Image (cartoon, rainbow, N blue to C red; front, side, top):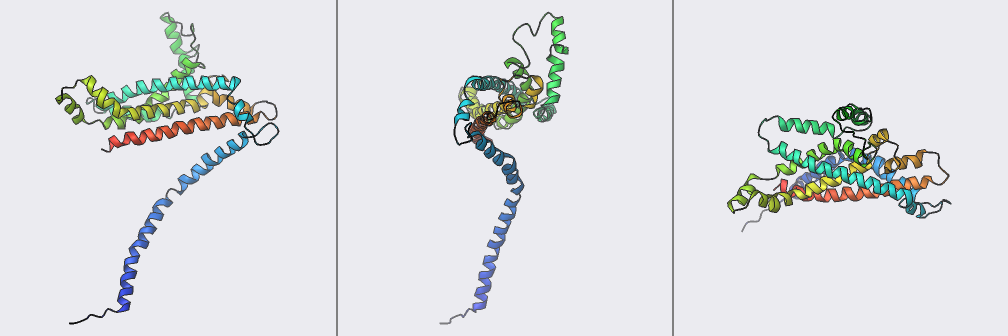
Length: 307
C-alpha cells in the first residue's frame, strides 16, 4: 500500500490561493459601497445635522432651559389653525393629484395609438413635476389673478371667478396651483404600477365570468392601492412643505412654512424664535411619518411589478 507525501509548501500555496478570492471579493464589496459615501455625506450635512439643530433649538423654554413649552405652543392657538389650514389644502391638493394623475397615467399606459403619446406625457411630467417657485406663481398670477388673462376670458362669458371664495392664497386657489406639479408627479409614480398589471389577469377574470367591475374591484384596485396611497402621501408631503410658490402667491400666515419664516426672520420678541423652531420640528415629524408610510407602501407595490 503506497502513501503519498504532500509538501507543506504546496499546502500553504493552496491555502493562500483559496484565501485570495475572499480578500478580493471583500475589496470589491468595499469599493462598491464607497460609491455611496457622497450620498451619506449629503444626508448628514443637509438632513441629519439641520434636523438635530432644529430639535435642539425647539426643546427650550423661554429661560433657555430644556423643556417642551415651545413644542406645546406650536400646536395651540393660531399655530394650530395654521396646521389645520395647511393639512386641509395639502390633503385636497393630494386628492386632486391622485385622481387626475391616476387616470392620466392609466390613459398614457394603455393607449396604443399614437405611439409617442406615452413619451410625451412622461417627458412633460418629468419637467412639470419639478416646476415651482417664482415661475409657477407668476404663471398663475398672469392666468388666474384678478387681472389675469384667464380671469378676463371667464368674465367675458359671464363668470366672475372672484365672486365667491376663490383666492390664490386660500384653499381653492392653492389646490389649483399645486395641482400643476402634483398631477405630473402622480403620473410618474403611478406609471410603473400600471405597467405591472398583466393582461393575463384580466383574461383570467373574464374566463371565470367576471366583469370589468369585478376585475377592478378584486384585482386591479387592490394591486394599485399601495401605489395610490403612497402617491397620496408623497403629494401631501410635497404640498405641505412647499414654500417658494406659496410665498410668491400670498402672505397668508396660516400656511405653516410661511409662518415658520415669520418667526425665524420677522420682528418678534426674544425667545419666540423657539416657537418657529418648534413649528419646523413638528413639520419634520409629520414629513417623516408621511415618507416612512410612503416607503412601506412603495415596497409593497413593487412586489407586483417584479412578479
